[in-house]
Image (cartoon, rainbow, N blue to C red; front, side, top):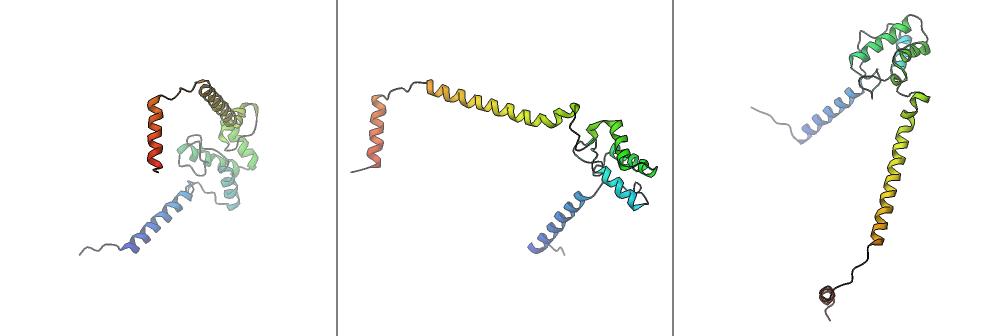
Length: 167
C-alpha cells in the first residue's frame, strides 16, 4: 500500500530541505586532513584563508572554495604557520607569489587603481551618456514643429467630446 504525505508533511519536508541547503552553503571547504592539530594555529590559518581570494573562483575566499588551487593555498598557509611564520609573513609570502589580486580586499596602489576606481568611472561615463541622450532627445522634440489639426481631426475631437458629454 502506497502512502502519500499530507500538506503538513510536505511542508515539513520542504522546510528540512531548505534548512539543509542553507546549512551546506555555510560549510567551509577545509577538509579534515588540512586541519592543524593546534587549535590556535588553525584559527590563525582560517583567518588568513578568509582574506585570500581563490584565483580560480575569483569571488570566494580560499576557505570557502573547493578548487584544487584553493586547497593548495590552504595547505601552503598552514605549512608556513606551522614552520613559525607570523600571520603577516604567511600572507606576504602568498601575495609575493600571486600578487595583490589574491587578496579579497586589495590595497589602494598604482597597479590596483583600476580595481578601485573602475566601477565609479564606469558609472560616471554611463551617467554622462544618459544625460547627453536626454538633452539631445528633448532638443529634437523642441525642434519639431507641431502640425496643425486637419478638419477631419477637429471633427473627430468634436464627436468624442459629444459622446462623453451628452446634453
